[in-house]
Length: 142
Image (cartoon, rainbow, N blue to C red; front, side, top):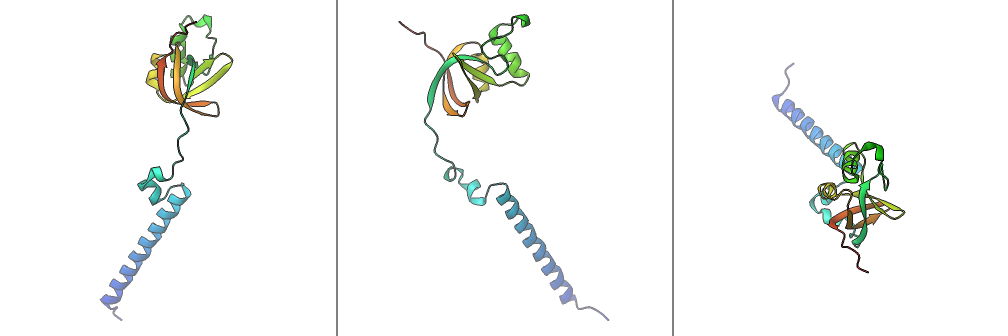
């Protein structure tokens, strides 16, 4: 018994269509599970929440390990100790009196200003400041 070539082609075509539909369904389901959709990737601003108002914070740039007190045993300046700790995996921090904030963003500027009194503009989220800008603090006049 010989099979008809048109049936073979139809079978291949239907099998291909099923594979394409299954792949499309998988991709769509995977994107939905990951929290993104085609609309979100085309228009990311449409799904973002409005940015919080930027505030300014003043203090000393340090790291999350040492905080306000760098070890004298290390024989490094506060700036060098901060850079070394950040290089070892710690985060930059801003110390203002008894308050300590983790700094996120602008690592090159923070490296330059390590150990210095600065004014940071950013958005506070919990205990973390999303840094927008870093500037040398102006001296207080009395």
